[in-house]
Image (cartoon, rainbow, N blue to C red):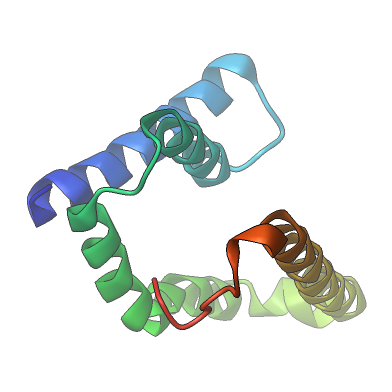
Length: 125
């Protein structure tokens, strides 16, 4: 899978998720639904195509660049954050705690699932 096709599939899934959220009036972010659609598509395909894997690895290496819009949004709404800083802080801490818990549970599930197939190599993509 060439890089251009991989990037197209990522954007397509995000747009499909955004469209689904707007049409169904779901209280979820469109990119999250797009990511779930991508997961379902990859599970149906049975593996991650090599081009998509390489493209995503390059995107993840430069992940900090994707946070620039979020930082700009925080600066734009700084007045609101001054008034609502406790709620913002609680949401950030809760989000991090939930992410760590889900990651740990997923890793535990994966390790139990592959117990009979030998050790898991976490360094291999």
